[in-house]
Length: 271
Image (tube, rainbow, N blue to C red; front, side, top):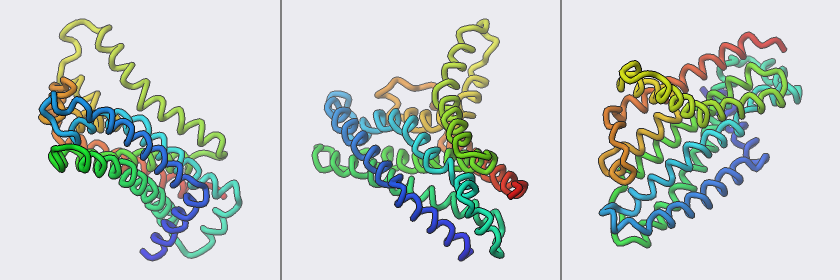
């Protein structure tokens, strides 16, 4: 266990030296503050707290930015070590390969957690200090923080999987960006095309919801936008059939499966 945390600490220090932590915190801080302050203006007219209104804008920001940051943090966790020639050295010590990968996953996840807590947390503090509602709506915002961290963990695990499978850093970054484009952008467009192309009654509501929530990015979006408090702001009522446990379970399953695949690829990797 000590070895695992040593690898995690090493990965965290590498992220600091590569300025990933500073860049991630700065991006989330500036964008979340901007969105939160802009979205808080109509809160009184909608009978919703400033924190609840900010969840709408921050969810739309997070579903694009958090997966991208997670993949950029994790795409070279393994293949980067291999290109530098340090992977063989690390594995020459009496450690299991799974410890190396899980340690790197934890280190990269720590970077993302700090970025989310500082970026989103700062906007929450500003809103609570400047709005009349104070901490009203903190439950929705706390759910946003937790699900954002879990969404980041999904894509960090996927980045580790690609990094363990790829042979070059250039290939890994291309695959990661392609994966981001597929899951975050193209998947929804594909569902929309499917919805308008099939005959009425062929695609049932339950099947459509299942297809929607099976994507971790959409599970994150629906989870934060379909609650009774926030859903009335965006008119998203259909997602009410998706429970918090279901959405969290989907994202957790993606994380576990991706980590298992990454460990399997690293065990088979020829050095």
